[in-house]
Image 1 (cartoon, one colour):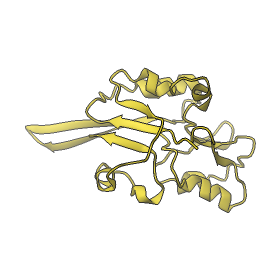
Image 2 (cartoon, one colour; image 1 turned 180 degrees about the horizontal axis):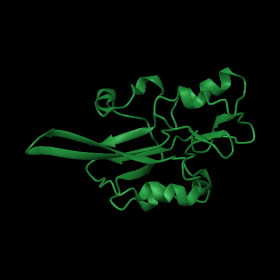
Image 3 (cartoon, helix red, strand yellow; image 1 turned 120 degrees about the vertical axis):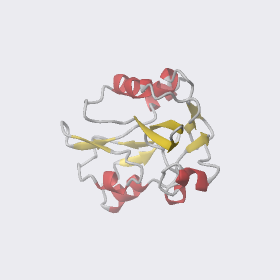
Image 4 (cartoon, one colour; image 1 turned 90 degrees about the vertical axis):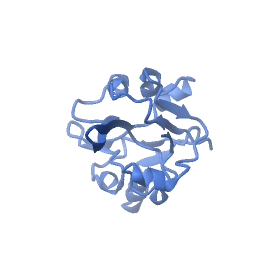
Length: 179
């Protein structure tokens, strides 16, 4: 199984949120549901201050806590796509218990009030099957967000934790950083 994931460069992200807009437009998500979001972090003291942005979504983990939670209650709505390694939710099986949402240390699963089920980034599997990048990748003007078709996760766990992530050893998120 190929494992697709994200490559992210903090130095290249301007915080424009084009990735957020692209995701919403591609998937036609309800306004309150966010499958990609941008957070910002300020560091330093005046006059040596810095502002960093981070575009975040589901990391399609090697050992996804969301999938374990769904399996534990016997629903099995969350599976891994064999071709790309994307962790996806089958909406026809989701019962809306939200256990996956509570289990994910990265906040990826999102509650949809309209359908009373949980959704999350699916890595734009429909685009990958057509030989294209996820919409967020194609729209990133600074090329801060890229697709990694052979992702092995963060190379330095300590760096990921320093960036505010939950310990990657917990789930094996498929993202690498260019800091």
